Image 1 (cartoon, rainbow, N blue to C red):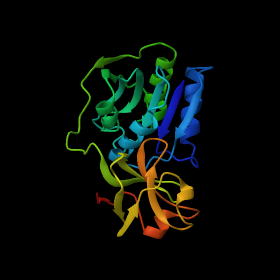
Image 2 (image 1 turned 180 degrees about the horizontal axis):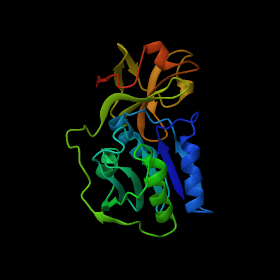
Image 3 (image 1 turned 120 degrees about the horizontal axis):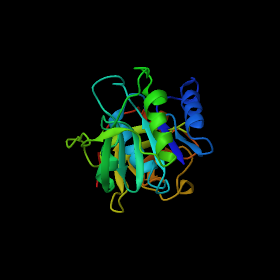
Image 4 (image 1 turned 90 degrees about the horizontal axis):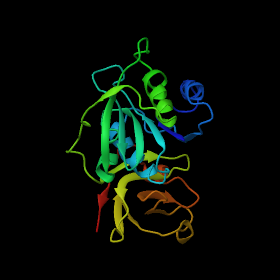
Length: 237
């Protein structure tokens, strides 16, 4: 299968154009739309999301992830083999957390096809490479070292995604000893399930992907707390 994670959104034609190319180059291969609202241009924040949300993707799958504000620039287009999966996308830090959490088996810089649009590598570079890999063909390229970002925190105490419920996902992995955080100027306690909170009460919990998430029962935690993308948090424990 080919699993897609992008910041393309779903109201523009970009996802459809990518899926069309994948369907042409890899007919019959399942295409899974996992995430098309990664935070726009936010490579670091998206790195934590890609790692967390791909941990249950079956081994052997091809994961095509794109948050690429420098498309057409000096960064490589790569295929990274890690954790028995192959990640296709830009070498701009998007796979930094994958490389930290998984066993890296190799990395290739992809050859940019002649005539590829310099502003749409998703369709013209990454999709053909992902399709080839899903069909068992290694695309042309050369072995390179993944560009690393050692100054990025292993766990990032910031809001990295806000869903349509107003729940705020953070870059913190859940730990049993983490019982209190401060967000939006308020001290929040941990709950195990939504039913433990009173309606409208902000709290945090371990989400289904192992990250700390801030929520309010039957309400928008982001609105109540005034949270926005990249807002910092404090761990109070």
